[in-house]
Image 1 (tube, rainbow, N blue to C red):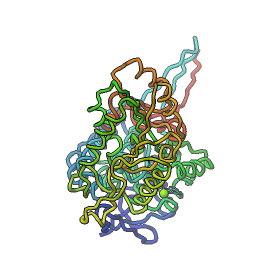
Image 2: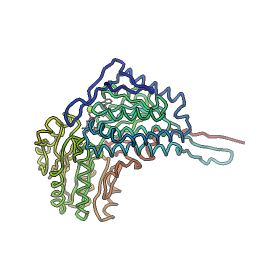
Image 3: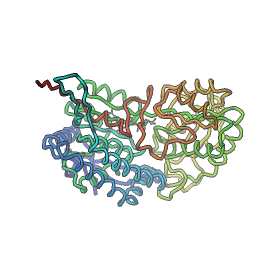
Image 4: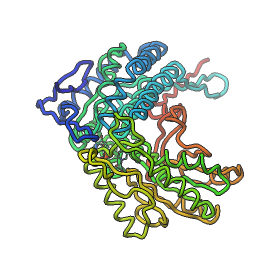
Length: 480
Ligand code: NAI
Ligand code: MG
């Protein structure tokens, strides 16, 4: 059976009937066949989204009613959590427990923003006697959303939920490498009473469906998560139509560890931050900056962890699953070779696992690259795999300088018992989020998330995300 596009509340084949295969990265086998959206389909979906807004059944519905439907979607996601988590695990390869957590976070987005739908307020602005001035936050219109394959249901919900709360309609293009749960999300939303056309889901290829969506003159806003290169390209397409964009483009986030930290808790936090989802996380803690005095102790703890992690098919719920694709696996392998040539030392991993039963999947071992210096490519470029670059530093100023010596600025983690040191770094590090003695906050639905520098701009998650999905109308009244 072919998974169909979701346009205007119904499922349909692609305009030319084309499909593509989706692979299970744990086995390399075909998981599903999916309709491949064309330019014509993008046009149909954008029109359906506009029609939904014109019909006023969503943006014009009582905000509390919008919120109720969104909370129903949250409940449905929770009721179907096991089915969705299994599908996500097969499609993306991630361990089942991580997929389960992703589904709960997706549900939480609909719950959080469902509660926000009737609390999107404006201001009154004092102009003096004889004037009443007020602002209204109106929906921006049709939001185009292009998402990656690393957290499909989570990132799908992260963009769709605030747009829905604001009264917008959405055209969502999932990644060709993992489109399945985004399609389920669209189906569930319809089953929960969402008016047709409010959420449309168009699986397809980036250069075809993605580019047609980003350059469509009918969209009013674009949210993109993915690579810097494609982000720049889609931002230019949107610019031709004066369409504002939110860009979430990944990073090379540092975990900065001082010798006075609780090194057991730190080792666990640092390992999670890089090995979760096999390192294929925009906010992965992919650089470890460790105070030289603590280097050997911490690296030993990390090595012990990395060597005992079980790598295997996502649905067997291992500690780490495969990489998404052969291409991405080769990228990771190549980076490790580059690191070695640059003089880094492999402290753990550094190759595919020897277990023959994993031979057909795209597996790689949890890898520690030690003795990395801040300007090596493996310290500067996003690898997007389970590879941690370990850099030693001697003092706080040096740590801050290394942390900021990056084209990226998404997240920083700080591990110390000294609150003064932690606060000093938090104020000087150039990243959109800072965590002290923790990392990531379990999805962080409530916390504004986004980048400094080439990590992007605009904020998702939390109440700040609503700025992207609303536009402010000021009304000035003169009365006698
Ligand atoms: P990508 O940036 O090519 O894909 C992200 C999304 O953009 C997908 O939905 C894709 O279909 C779409 N896309 C691709 N080309 C497009 C185009 N010309 N016009 C419009 N949409 C287009 O990312 P890819 O190739 O999957 O991964 C490459 C690298 O990007 C990774 O190694 C990683 O470094 C980075 N990346 C970062 C992510 C993040 O969370 N910030 C997520 C995925 C990848
Ligand atoms: Mg690409």
